[in-house]
Amino acid sequence: MVQDKTWFRVRLGPYARIEEVNKVRSELAKQGIEAALVKKD
Image (cartoon, rainbow, N blue to C red):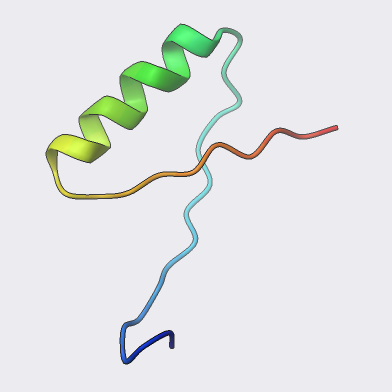
């Protein structure tokens, strides 16, 4: 827990293009869900 909040890690993808990532992040943001992009090496 961070500052009395429960955090969940959810992994999505893989995505072939950054445009796909941005679309999904936009949809999540509309629902109040903050998303971080993590690239796999």
